[in-house]
Image (cartoon, rainbow, N blue to C red; front, top):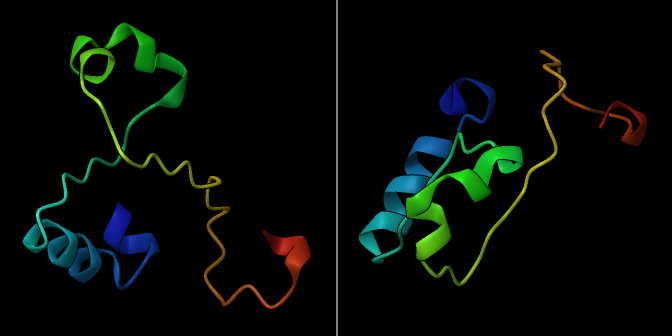
Length: 65
């Protein structure tokens, strides 16, 4: 699903992993506190992307985001 919405996602994630990064995606931020593995690990960065609206064409206007 990630690669479907973001064409460079696979190569970006692979490169980050080559650099030693732990990359997680598909995490539901509303249930993170219930996940023991997420609660007990420390992270340097957490990025919460806005949900993608699913536009097929490029988002030419800020109102589409």
